[in-house]
Figure (tube, rainbow, N blue to C red):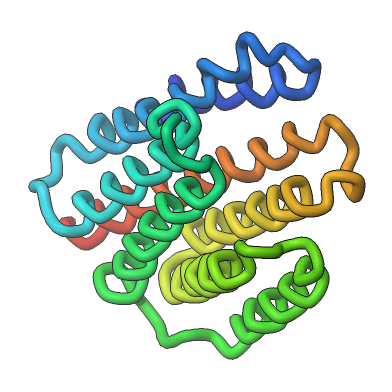
Length: 213
């Protein structure tokens, strides 16, 4: 998994820049995260034949990149709806990947906690969502779906999805209730995000290797 080292380094630099308020570094490094992760996947999976598993993984990473850079790539559109749309599509790719390509067991009963998470999150944020209520509710469904279907795979992917869910939960509070989190909250948002995406990618490549061998 040495191919993931550049991604890990960029992640550390990005999160560290956010923690100290170095936005001149945090901005560019954010846009490097998903390309570095895609390169890590391509490098570590290079002995494997191209297949639907890797295509779905790279599609999810690419859509996440568009979500990360929504303001940069789509300056003529409102940032938040575009970001939700890009990440929503990324999560649909992940759901397909976990539920159809990589499942090793049935859906565990404990994943019902994600339904509880969705209800509680909506109940807390509802007064602050305004015109985005439906979009956030739908996004929450696909995010919970990613976390739940990841639990049908292995522990690495499952934990990756948990970190991803944690990141988006923190981000939701940061966007809609900014007074509820401290100014430095961007660092834990991106720390859990980079951990989540990295673990998912590494877990998928490892699972693919196991199936091929």
